[in-house]
Length: 255
Length: 190
Ligand SMILES: [Zn+2]
Image (cartoon, rainbow over all chains, first blue to last red; front, side):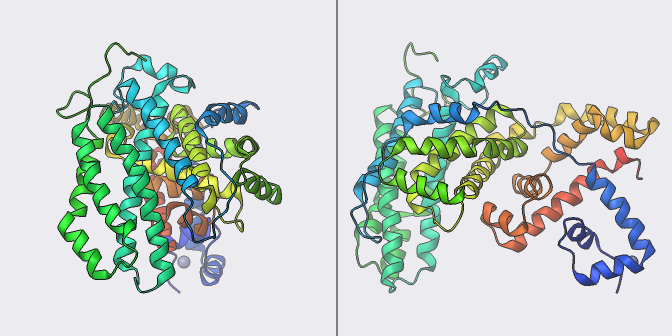
């Protein structure tokens, strides 16, 4: 056998090495020396100290999270059926976050804020973490939508349970999309609202057609330029507050 | 513990929102640790923990009872951290590297005169290590943190990153290669 490659050394180091590599290492002095050196270099890479969280940390997280959660209701539908209350729970939680951020008028402000803001970063009352949560929630929404389109692309739409699942996902996305659009509109962001409106059209097509065929899907994709819309929304999300078409900062509000 | 977590999940899904508190309390610390290791930033890590538990709550019906809740929420936290690092405007921040280059050079110069082993243990070395980590892509860094610091298996890493096992393995490889190359001057090529 030839000497161990770097990849094989890495595997050995993490305990995933092949039997062959292990045996070679025992008999080949050259590789053994090389591996010892390799091991030293990796052993030296240590975690920087993780800042200590007190015993109350979990409670602190829970207290911050608690007001954002809406209780689930008892399940009454079958595993396949879509329950509207669940949708309302998820969507309402997103809406609460969105609204909080929009009211701050600073949704699109990223971490460009001055160093003074950093000090408040761990304060539960600070709006900044929530704004970032909102950005993440919206990005997550786009990611899920994109994933759905990809899945639809590869799905066997004659398989009823598969298409039912995808449709469920589409309905879920449609409902949250509606809330995002309404919020964007309310907060005077017509560009984002418009893009979300077009995305809603796509989701509605998928969610509401119980007998979706591959040809339908292709038509939706083409006619509605789905990838163009997704791209547009993503671009809108990266805007700075004073860019054209961005939401106007709320008057007199400073957080 | 795991059985207990499962019964809590069932209670939450049956409408007992308060029960979720026990899950948050039990698993926040691990989520914080991995989030901090990935982002290197305390405030970011705290936000990620919040996000992860919020998302977990929203998707609780999708949680499969055959896996552990702790593993599941840990994975969500990794995902939150990853997507946060992967976003361009944030990526730029993580990499805002120009002014740190001078620092790297100082570290390397100091390293030449000193006992490399000792230097490696020093503060400068950990700064250099941190900078080298920041030069990894978000996926590479995540994969490396999970493998090297969190000692997760390749299978777990692949699942957490949502990629094929081989892609996870390649990400760890690339990270190790880059880190060793970057940190070689510090070791005086020992
Ligand atoms: Zn050899």
